[in-house]
Length: 171
Image 1: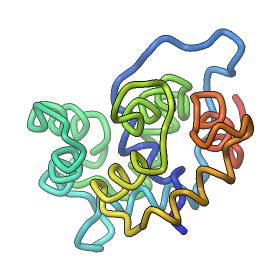
Image 2: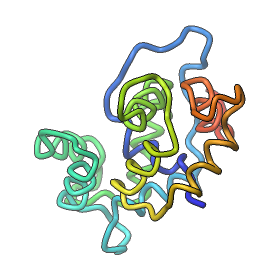
Image 3: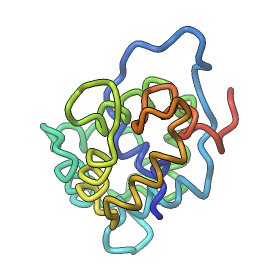
């Protein structure tokens, strides 16, 4: 069954208002970040090219991928070789203060396709396939059941936040 946590960095590019009772940042889990990195590194050569980065953004329906890629590479490509390796990828996330609650909220919005404030198994299938994860409706229903603490058959923001941060350390 696929995990949602590796999709966090891919889906969280916009910043939104934070809830005051939620910690501001979380330290990224290295193993989870390796999975995220591999989503960008589509040819598996150990580095992310601008074209790979743009392709991942396009798959997510992001607009203005050229400008976003240029900005990301300006910040992340610290050795100037035109690629982002895993160390640069991790440094970028650590330099920005870790994973912010607003990043998790942005990822939630990406999964909440219909904008009703909850993620259904059907929405999860749609987004997971869009980012290249192989999953079916039944596996997504199992994921929802595993996270759905209020029993409504869907994932709300609080449940999503708990799931996404369960392996992370708070700053």
